[in-house]
Amino acid sequence: MLVFSTRPSLGIPMIAIADEIQRRRTFAIISHPDAGKTTLTEKLLLFGGAIQLAGAVKARGEARRARSDWMKVEQERGISVASSVMSFEYAGHAFNLLDTPGHEDFSEDTYRTLTAVDSAVMVIDAAKGIEEQTRKLFEVCRLRDVPIITFINKLDRDGQEPFTLLDEIEQTLALDVTPASWPIGMGRDFLGCYDLIHDRLVMMEKGTKGALPHEGEACEGLNDPRLDARLPDHAVAKLREEVEMARALCQPLDVDSYRAGHLSPVFFGSAVNNFGVRELLAGLTRMAPSPRPQPTASRDIHPQENKVTGFVFKIQANMDPKHRDRIAFVRLCSGHFKRGMKLTHVRTGKQLTMHNPTLFLAQDREVAEEAFAGDILGVPNHGQLRIGDALTEGEGLRFTGIPSFAPELLQKARPLDPLRAKHLGRALQQLAEEGAARVFRPVIGTDWIVGVVGALQFDVLADRIRTEYDVPVMFEPTTLYTARWVSADDSALLKRFVDSNQGALAEDHDGDPVFLARNAWHLERAAEDYPKIHFHKTKEQT
Ligand code: G4P
Image 1 (cartoon, rainbow, N blue to C red):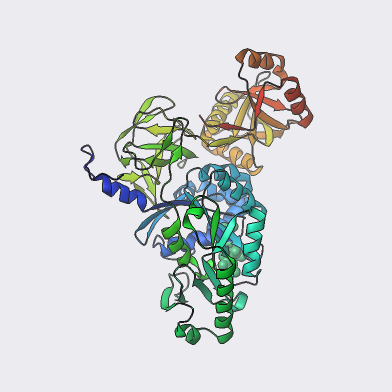
Image 2: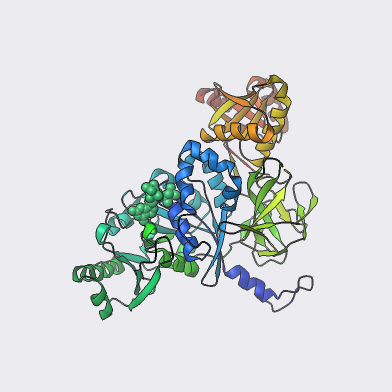
């Protein structure tokens, strides 16, 4: 219940805080590479007034795909950090768009980012339909009941028919779908999208290249004679027929069902031509949830709670290679955050003063004077903050569901200069704490085993260790197959397991025991021999 009171310490009426929360939309875009995520991101920013000309964000999508260019982009970390979160205003709403890496080698980053959003937009190429990466990311959203709006892109090219696409999404993802807009024509004949929610068509008038297009006159309803005047006869007839069919065949757009993650409203468009983008934004404004409660081990945190809480879901290190500073990305979950306030770092119990928290704009950053649930703060620190860490006004919370994945690729890290072994150890420990890789120290021997989810991560690590820690390093293949964190309800049993499997045991950067399996059989055998030992594929960040 809303109470008209004023918090004495902050002097801001509670009703104003409730309004701030209500107008926030924190979301991510998920897609298979090339479906148009970067282009759509850019158009959202353009419509939101956060950038003036298209072209600024776009270069990145391209660059990220090519390996050498990707490294270059990563080195220009200023850009990369600023664009990890893009905030913009549209129609009185505050949007926080969280970027997810397109390359599947960095999917772990994406999974964690999805823990920090309240909804997602799934971009699909009209010609290709649901692709592999879309499906994987969709499953992550489903696990967390993240509501999804679908944007079917590239209608300006010949693709599959709208009904076929709707059917494919429904069948492949076992998700209810219903159109929120309807395409008028396709390919060269694509003329725009009819807004089924408002039952109107707003024609776009071409703007100058890259700039925001002008809105043309609106046609209200399918029987508006202006439709006949503005569109070719066959296009109007087809539109009327298809919309009638869609209304008869598809279920009504039930916002509650969407917010519960059961139904996806589908928008059609062509991001590159600005078609469908305004309708999508209007849909996000109207339907997408404002900040949702966040689960912790002890209770759910509600955004309207007075006290500030938040968790770290991403760390970006060494924006300036000369200083080992890191930016922790904190998702605020509740309260009214103010610059300069002291927050408890729950894992260590230490107080952190928020001197220079950052808010991220499209191409820029600014110091955050205040922020609310749903906002993403960048907190500069020297390595104290780790992924999964909670910041509160004193309560001992542990946010749940932020995973650390068992690596699928394991290599040995060796310094080119043997005298730098200690430095390498320190660098690896820091990178592991940051969440950039898993690092294991076998119980026997002096090697460091580094585990990642995607092969490209080794290149990035080697590059970072060389440039940021001044340790030229080599990664060498191992015969290891996979790693599993091990635990047991009975600590004596765990000790027995560890003692008798020393050759395959290692510790991670937190000192937790890890079983390094040589092959699938080795893992199966261990599990059979020790049925009461749990072998975990993921470890929740603590
Ligand atoms: P991604 O981030 O999902 O990987 O995709 P991105 O936006 O980079 O788009 C991938 C390619 O698809 C780009 O073409 C982009 O221009 C194109 N594209 C995006 N939206 C649309 C659309 O609505 N219609 C059409 N026809 N194409 C679209 P490219 O050739 O890789 O780059 P570029 O030379 O066009 O910049």
